[in-house]
Amino acid sequence: MLNTTSPAVPVVNNDGLHIPAELAESLSARQPWISPKFLYDPLGSKLFEAICELPEYYPTRTEADIFDLHGPEIARTVGTGATLIDLGAGNCAKAANLFPLLQPRQYVPVDISAEFLLDAVERLRQRFRHIEMRPLGMDFSGSLELPDSVREERRLFFYPGSSIGNFTPDEARDFLQRVHAQCGRDGGLLIGIDLAKEHAVLDAAYDDALGVTAAFNLNVLRHVNRLLGADFDIRQWRHRGFYNPAQGRVEMHLEAQTVQQVTWRGGSRRFAAGEWIHTENSYKYRQSDAVGLLAQAGFAAARVWTDPKQWFAVIYARA
Ligand code: AVJ
Image (cartoon, rainbow, N blue to C red; front, side, top):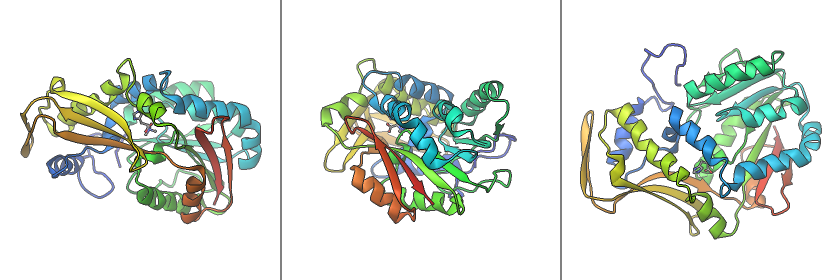
């Protein structure tokens, strides 16, 4: 858990590995990779906010349209007065838009980007004084242990934006199982999942004309430089973002533009010109597969809402 109250405590992820050790290991692998959770330092979270404004990046807009169109029906389905646990809350904007409809009793936004989250919650507290807010700065990708301060009554997990796409389908099932285990008896999960679509739409969404996604991806190297004391030269790397049809996922990579030696605390590696570091997967699901995944994770009957183009699905799965 990333401890937000005592920064002197070494940051440990949920495999019990210290984050620098986890990073050094993945950078030293035969096929080097960096977990997408490291995209979210304070600047990375802001760059992701900017991505959500891009014309090419349809998921945020499409999901918001679904909530605009079906909000009242969604609220009737999930009920009001819940403990709303927002996984990967970021700027908390998606949940805040639903507050008037869902009227949560307690709001628990969770995000690895703790500093960014706490800023957002400060502003939210001014707007919604009657909702009890318990922000948690933690990495929930490995385990999902919630402190006792999180109410156990009527837990509604909220996992919007297709963040589930960062997991492989197997990992996603395991993760959803852990969410299910935390739901309690009359809880549930409201999740946004990006659907399979025309490849050109996906390619543009993850390699936009302005280069915001490129900046978002490259920024991970700045974050790694700080976390690991590494000396990545950002100018020597190039963003790659595209749909991989064989895997059913968008992939982001960073491509070395020249041969280079990168050094960090306790290690170093030579990258060949043209070598790639894999930084993100974003799986796209067919609606039936998304519903099947929730069932495999132990959830009961699901309700699905989509947009007219069927680009995105909002699903409520009862525990
Ligand atoms: C936050 C993981 C849902 O996969 O679309 C946006 C992250 N990466 N552009 C996604 C992202 C590149 C986003 N998620």
